[in-house]
Length: 65
Image: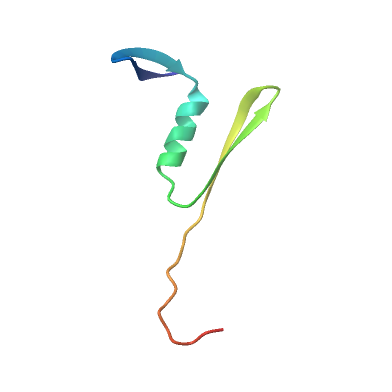
């Protein structure tokens, strides 16, 4: 389990974060375009899926389709 520091009313305190939450944070922060999907089974996170999309710039040509 990871530790996180919460700031509430000017005071800092550590809270325990579930492992899956830290995994989701890392996946989202490293993603430019795409999705992060959380799979839950019996009220427990069992899987985290990440799909990354690569956006390509269209060439600036005068031709249209």
